[in-house]
Length: 374
Image (cartoon, rainbow, N blue to C red; front, top):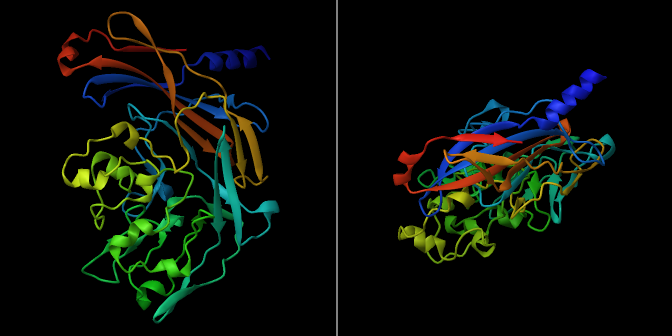
């Protein structure tokens, strides 16, 4: 009993996985961020409890099925970005049919604090081609579990409609449901998305895009995990624009204020500055939060076998100091990422403390680089 109490005490005071990461601010000045990762056990109806061991910080992206960017989507994004404009909340998990009974479609949802997101999850469906008309959708196949990942969301690529004009959906080139032309070999048997927004479903009339410049009118890919850096609108935050995006186009993302006004024209004129702090936020739409206190209530629906999971973030905010040679300075702590794995009842939180150092000319004055975390 005494030995168990000693382990709990040690864990309560363990700093977590800690790393100092250099970076640069929007105005070009150098900064040092101290990243702290702590792992927790999710307990139904209670605040999350500190795990016996903290998982290490992920230094590289990890893809589903041990894949790579050529054919897979990101499951876990690397955790060493020096700065984020907001807090990412990601849920890595599956939809579970209620009572373990086969189902053709269901809703899943997450609420964290006052923010809520709901998705429609649908069994496998395919298109049946019709000459000169919109395709017919097959009935959904019943399922017990469905992974919530972006290769099951709307998107994909069409390299057959016009071999001279390969089309990769800029928002998600790994998804399902994209067809540029009403061509039998493209549309017949085309896999349809399993994960959609209930208020923006893909309909038979929307399957065939026809004009590639019309892609901004297509559905936004939906999920609960990571949106990849190469996808629009995230890629546009560092000045990379996809093809078939015309000057003067105001995309849904611009109207949602995920991108600055007139960003297309500015990027084409090389006048769009990089927004690296915003680019580093990669959680799904609706799950990038302006701020988190770290003690918010979390509710998950349809993402566990029991159907409901309610718990509270631990309220465990690390105290971070950084010494650059002039004594320890207490840093303001912000939450970078909350990563929830409902099937495993596990939770990781990456927090950040940042100290702005100054221009490159000051780097020669750096005497020490030492962090302390409590």
